[in-house]
Image (cartoon, rainbow, N blue to C red; front, top):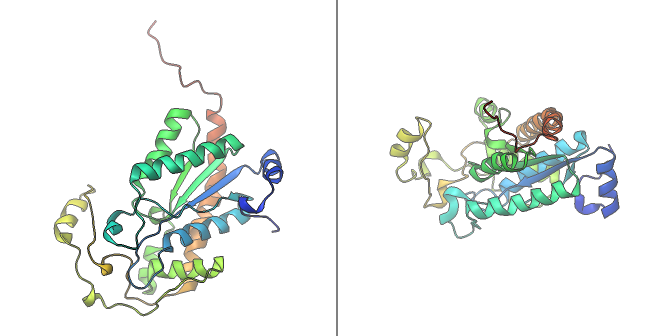
Length: 265
């Protein structure tokens, strides 16, 4: 399909014309710049999120905006190559973008993030709707049903690394990937990991911080870009299938008066 995917490639009036024609879907990929061990590039999360957005945009006639490459990194904050934002700063920055996308005229806005645990964006999706009555969709790719973890276990291939390899190829990015596996025996245990698992095993949450370059993003399986592409397409397919529902949801709430309340007669 001859469809210009990225907003940056459009003249301003062309963007407005497509919105007026009903192509009112905006996708915003959100990743990170963080250490992924000695094997994967710092932009791994961003590449995966952007690739999924590209695949979805071709079918949805959606407009993809440039990826946000900085976010709250979580456990990799210790690492010198990681660019660390607070959750609040990530929230405020993405919210400002969403507000401008809505002002431009987009009625269906999807935030697509490959980074865990996505607390800031989960909060944004809930609070933005509760405060404005305008729904946005947050697609936390790591936790979606099509994330492909089980598939990679079955095939004994590296999950994140395979997705990264596929994304780099799809986006035609010259990123460095070291395909040599790191033996599990060489990977030091995360400090307090046994105690942490007792807590998180109940569904509760506790802070997690690495202290060694082998604590995040490492893999000891082979990379399979074909499997990675299969997963990227699965995730894009879920966005394609559900964006129409976001449109229905938005229409149902368009004229709702949030100031109404039940009064006792």
